[in-house]
Image 1 (tube, rainbow, N blue to C red):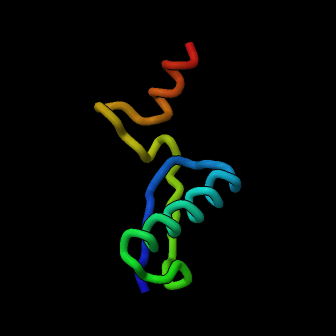
Image 2 (image 1 turned 90 degrees about the vertical axis):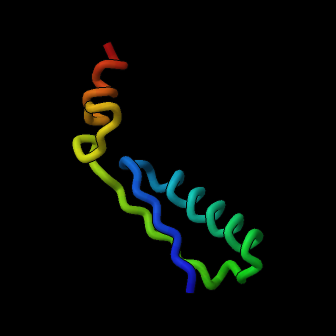
Image 3 (image 1 turned 30 degrees about the horizontal axis):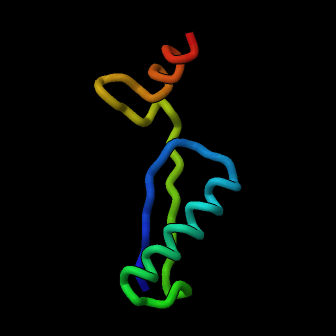
Length: 66
């Protein structure tokens, strides 16, 4: 049973549904493994637990909002 894992910032349910659907569809097409065999795990991380370029994602978003 293939597992697809994605770590990302928090997002809404509709985006998670779209990710699960599209990741599964694409992986099934590429691997020729039936879609029902795939498991998708979404690990949502708080913006203070993600760092890019030495700043947390929360800091980056706050700077962009100014």
